[in-house]
Image (cartoon, rainbow, N blue to C red):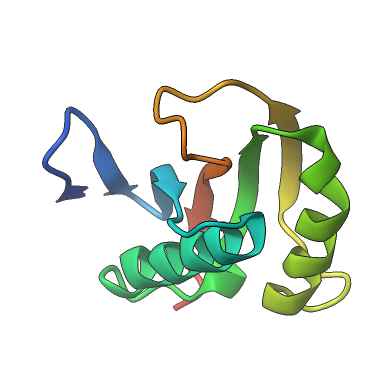
Length: 115
């Protein structure tokens, strides 16, 4: 069975298929990188909760930063949301976003079979 959490746009914020949840882009809002990354994690947790999957079950993320200078802060924030030695696999890159106020986005995969 496939379960989708739709958005008003042409993508789903998450698609649960079998034991996995495929997370579409999640971005945060705010004036600073700090506000945006914490808001992004709030949205990720909210999306996952709709599928009864905890944030700890995220196994892979792709993080897209507008500015590479935000990488050290991103590292610190990941330590706030994930236990040491239980981080998801991650790829981080920089890109330009369509929305000029966007400083970062995350997508990824979570495993729901642990519930």
